[in-house]
Length: 170
Figure 1: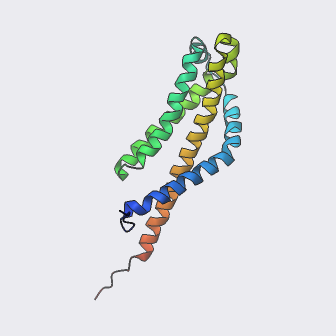
Figure 2 (figure 1 turned 30 degrees about the vertical axis):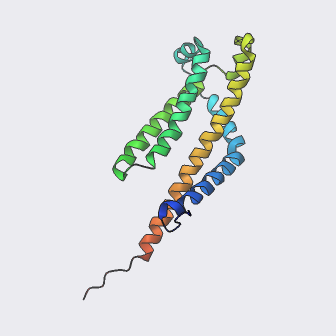
């Protein structure tokens, strides 16, 4: 049995895989710059009350960062399946989640303190650092994927608009 390549979904799968691989490659290239941006963000002024609250449970603060970090690409991927009417709500949700994630990141205890706070859990601290790097890479690849997909969609809509023949008045 062979695949029917004339069906649009059959032609789309290799394209999406190629787009996904390109996104991973681009994310790998720009990831060092993302870490630099995060270092600059971390130097932002702090709200003492929030910083103290998150310092009360550093492990929970670090784990919640994964929630905020995963929510943004999740919303971006979800938005690709929404109608135009819902896209504005998606943008608002994404911006709100980005604000929460950046605020949380700036105020949570440094993950570099993990080993000194939890010496008996050194392996968990190593896993946490590795997971932060992986999640940042995956999030960056997701952003790149969505931006490439949106750019290609825009080019497709532009090409469709150029292909339409103007109606002639008789």
